[in-house]
Length: 350
Image 1 (cartoon, rainbow, N blue to C red):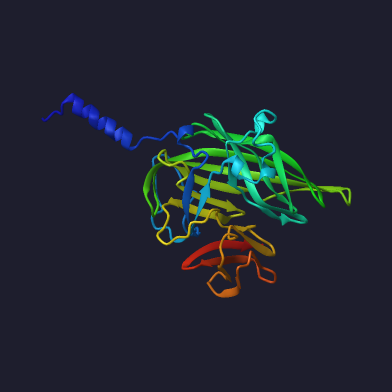
Image 2: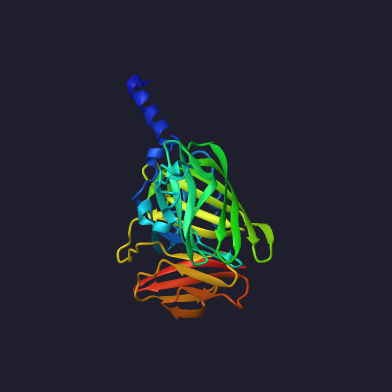
């Protein structure tokens, strides 16, 4: 009988363990100010189960179909509009809200008489956590700096398989010509899987984080001396992290069962136009109008609205919104043509 030397046996065992080892995502692995990622968008196929997960799992999403590309940049706080920086760039007056970096945020246009646009979210980082401390935006046309009265913890570091955590956040803002608007936010996450992820770009050792975001809006209208609250549909965020990358390598989000955003980390494609800001279509789902943000620096572009089978419904040149009035509820596509590049966004009409 042939016996391996003990040192070779130990080496084989170590390699076998390492090949199936869970990763531990530390703060040092996470992005910071100045970091940028290129994101290749795709339409989340309803026949593909992105929820599936487990220990030592192999997620094979190598056949995802590219539908366009944009990027996310971590801005210095000083790069955001000056009026936004009030609470986030003064460590002496507002130490609890002093931000490490800012990212472009989601605008709000689905609340009557309320328009929150050109938004930047501000984040504070430490060796143990990533926290959202507030945002800056144009609120009904006027710039404002909104700090969270209770801070929203996004993650606690390190992220390891089996970790569970939650946080609550709240803010209340004065709104010109309206009164006040605020949100209660409850965020809970679980590191519910680890293993290997394959995307069209690369294969990674990853952990998977599932986040549930619940939001309750509150509005008080001064003119009528009346207030109300209502719940937004829950958002489910699925993210895969690799220790070799500063951003998620794959992200899929859902609201009311409909995909919101779906993208995987990629390199800048040949011929792709690199924009200073990412292109966004919002709100999604929408009622009457879809707004397109991030095209202001371009001299010429075309936008088309297509139905679920690709028939053109409407087209416009150099426009910043497109109407859904009179259309039935369901799935539509917004196609943005920039020179020889086409970026497609799936949108849902209530």
